[in-house]
Picture 1 (cartoon, rainbow, N blue to C red):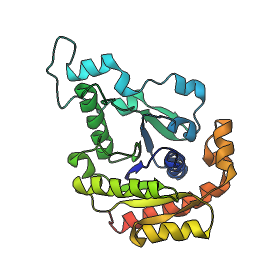
Picture 2: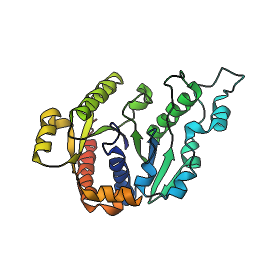
Picture 3: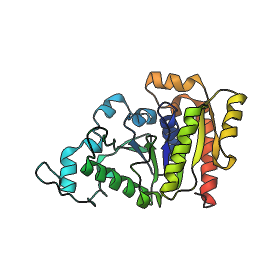
Length: 260
């Protein structure tokens, strides 16, 4: 199972991605969670200590590794478009609570042009993760899908956009759905987070097609407490865990029918 979780900053996509990963690990599945968000905090949400996370260098910042695999350096402008990456998930991931964490990082291109070797490595690793048949792979993405391509999306089972009750979140969902369609993915699912009441639920239902809506995660202070304590919401918030368990069952049922 390969799932890409996306959404604008602050909507709670990392909380959802981490809890979903923990739920699959609890079932005894091999789970790899990849952090592809520039504001990388998936590790904390999985339950890693700050000390462990401080020792992790994102793959896109490993200049020597990228030079070795792509052949690119300051003197050589030519590089491999198909570098070896199959050993990277196991060699550079760390495990906590049954989930392997791979911090990929992102490629900063704004104002500096395309940093092509890093971008090539990132896309190749994501493509390899999607093709790893024995793992549940959960990608915690930023709001765009620029790191994905047609070769990658062919193996993707679910695109899930985490939104909150608001016009900007709805716009993000529409943008992701458009980008996904350009990559050949017709179905994009939605999880609504920070839902406060029936009015919020009604707003979401009025904006999101019923077949796209996986479910609701209601606002609760336990998730804020988990963040303050630097702990996984899975271990602190029974309510969020229960609601995401229901959403997970819908994801599983959807995939068992072959839906994408």
